[in-house]
Length: 253
Image 1 (cartoon, rainbow, N blue to C red):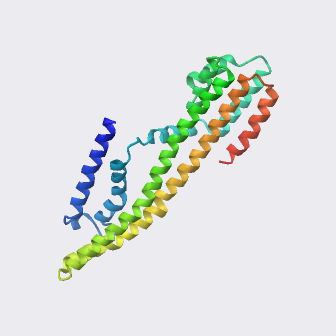
Image 2: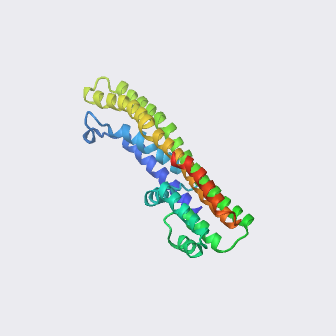
Image 3: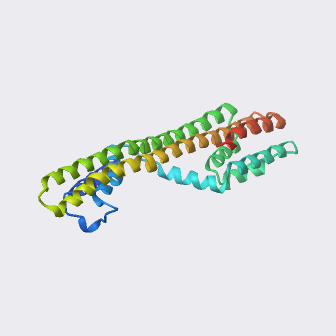
């Protein structure tokens, strides 16, 4: 809580600093192609507002770690590995391989599930623990999705704010031709940046995060189901068939 309060205070201080900068003459910082004031309002201010008003921590670490894990162990590699281990069951067991999975596998959920399986929990207890872990991770993904949804909504509003501020400056300095161009740039580029940020930055990121969240949930579900079937000592042929069915939708992601 203390860290969250400090982050909100920092966001408030930076937001005030941005508004102070907007009131200054920054014509030396921009060209005819880039207006610094409009860029600050559209691309920086939504993040600062998020820092001020969001109380929960944003799990960017989860996003980057999961992206890294997916690169190191792709869905196809994970399915192939689990199919190979399933085939070993019929030939005598995979206890040693599961210990290695719990210690050094590239997928964090696989390590967690293998560790629980090696601890010899009952199937019902194992199912409950795996479901709780999936739920916690999915809630973190939901938080990320809401963050980028918030940014996608706020950026156009700050673009409109930049347009209004630019028009006010323009009307205030109609007799000062030196300020007309900078005020007009702020007004027009504010609208432009707001549209660009929504259509080409935050909205596509939100859509990608939502898709990655669904793919991760399916991946975790497949791993959890595989370990539950192992825990219930089901027939290896049934385990393999179930794994192949679940992997079909995962390969489409």
